[in-house]
Image 1 (tube, rainbow, N blue to C red):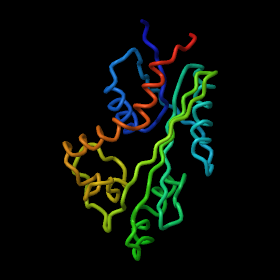
Image 2 (cartoon, rainbow, N blue to C red; image 1 turned 60 degrees about the vertical axis):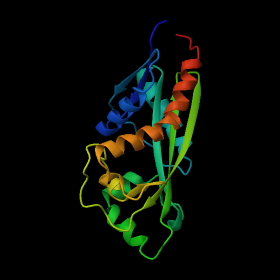
Image 3 (cartoon, one colour; image 1 turned 180 degrees about the horizontal axis):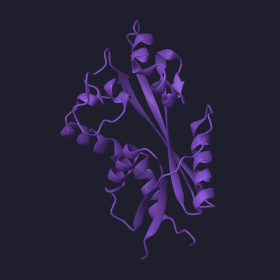
Length: 200
């Protein structure tokens, strides 16, 4: 059986590591190749449309089977803010302002919606997941593990945990990450792609 190679495009080194780590759990005939170039992203209320646009842009450039992942954040008491504008928020007002905006709220829940889109020139398939979080009362001073890489990790507490990602030890982080990927879109995608017979 020949190896199937699928391409993932990102310029974010942490995303590269996360993808490599998550996909290494699956021993099969699929090879994930990571390529780096910027893709113009569209802003849209529907993130499945954004990931579809992104994956088709990548395919247009490389003409090989590829997938793209897009993440959105919806904070319940801020009417779903910031939605697709996560990067912009982090580059402008930062996490301190998210905490300020939530000052008087006891309900600090939010969820991240991840959308994974695959395209091979013919087959388009989209997988989605929602992951629930709570936003901490105050920001963690530092990141104590070598896995949490975003400023958001200083304020994001996973469901069923009491501390933000930044304050987890490496061991705790790995256990949490493995738990998430065991039932997430990575697994769904790999199960789907392994069962497909794609024309070369």
